[in-house]
Image 1 (cartoon, rainbow, N blue to C red):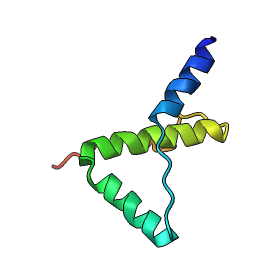
Image 2: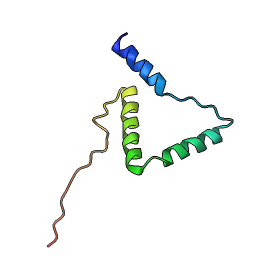
Image 3: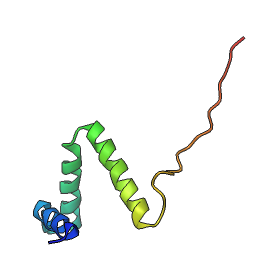
Length: 76
């Protein structure tokens, strides 16, 4: 099997599919899932998902648009 096929099989093994009676039920479950993850890990995962979205949109993830000019302030 090819490397890509092996990765696809491994990804499918890790997937869980759930059905919900309503969108509100799905939203509650998703909120509970994210809240059980420590804040630092949530931030890392949010960044990873942002990069993935940029790639899917054809944008460059290494240029996130969060660059700011830096200046110094001196008190006299």
